[in-house]
Image (cartoon, rainbow, N blue to C red; front, side):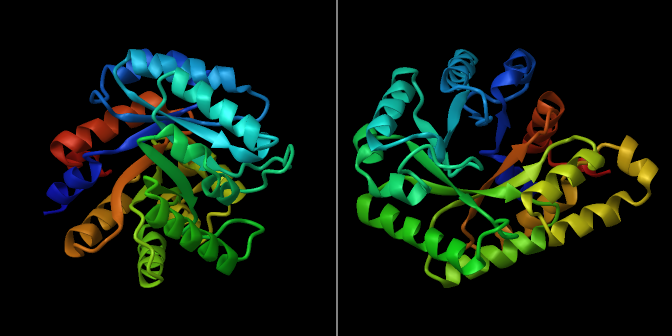
Length: 288
C-alpha cells in the first residue's frame, strides 16, 4: 500500500534549479518526465533575465518552468506589470510569489499586494504559487501567517485565481500534516504542494534548516543521521517523510496535499532520478 500511495503523491512532483544550475538541465531532463514543473529560484544579486534564460532552457527540454518572483524587489505595480509581461513573452505560464528576504525596493512589501492587484488576473497564468510555512516563518507571528494565507484563499475563490501553496521544506511528516489540518479547519481549500529536501548531505540540510526556521522536523533529521561523521558523509533521502505524507493522504480523501516539491540544494540530477524512479516503481530499495 505504501508504494502505491507514494506513486500517487509523486505523479505531479516538481523540482527546482537556480539560474546558476542550468548546466544540469540536460542531464536532469533525460530522467524527468515531459511536463515536469521545474521551479527557477530567485537569487539575490541575480537579475530577472538570468531567470528568464533558465525558463527558456527548461521549455526547450519540454519541461514546465515556474519562475520565483520576489515581490519586494519590484518597486511598484507598474513595474510588476512589466515584469509579468516579460515572463509571458518568454512562455512562462506559472509563477511562485514570494516576499523575498531583501528590504522592499518600493511600495510592494508582500505578496498580498500583488494578489489584490489586477496584474495577475490580466495575464491569465495557469498556476500561481504562494508560500506555506508548516513550521513557522522566522520573525513573523504565526497568527499573522495564518491570517495572510486565509486572505489569499479568499482572493483565489472570489477572483478565480489558480492559487496553490508550496511549503517550506521539512524533515518529518507530522508538522506538515498538523498544519494542513489546521488550515483546513480554518476553511482554507488551496491545494498544497509539500516541500521536501533533495538528495544532498545532512550537514548541508542542517545549515539550511537553521536559516529557514525549520524547527520540530530538524530534530528528526538529527536523530536519523546520528553521528557527526554520518552527518558529514551520508546522503539524505526524504523516504520516511514521503511515506508518512502518502499514507495520510491515502487515508484522508479531504486532504489538501496534492503533490510534493523537491529542494535539491545542488543535487538536482540525483534528486530528479530518485523522484522519477519513485514515481514509476515506488521507493522500494531506495528507502535506506
